[in-house]
Image (cartoon, rainbow, N blue to C red; front, top):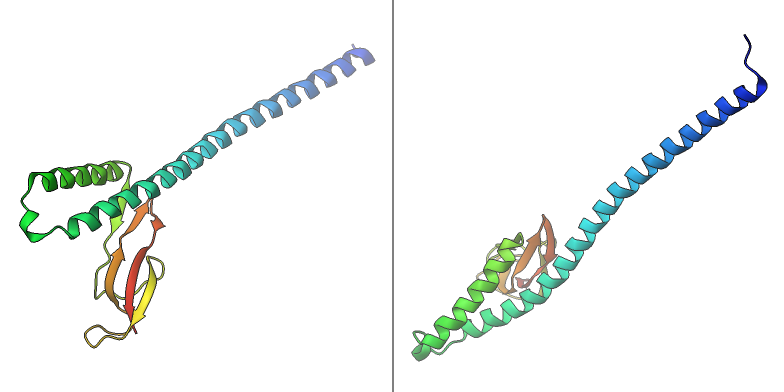
Length: 153
């Protein structure tokens, strides 16, 4: 028994509605996945910004503790300062931040360091680091702060 024209039209409309609903559901799932990725990227960006600010404080602790007078190296206030410096270091390590080991004598690598000065040196080969003024750090495999170095000419 042949279907009436109205039934055929309704079946066709039901099929179109079902296909539209399935496309909308797929779009919603894609939006959810995209939103999760975007939130994670935003979180990483915010964390990177916070870490860079904390690194500036950590740098100041290192500068201060590197210039302690010899007669005060065993004082209790210095032990407290060193403890605070270690706490800050431990916090950034717990966030997955790692210091990049760059030392005097290493070959200059512009992907890891910025040359802030170039000087002649009889002891160090040209293109090698004479002094590291500021440490470099990496987060999730990405260099978030380049080292500041003095390079031999």
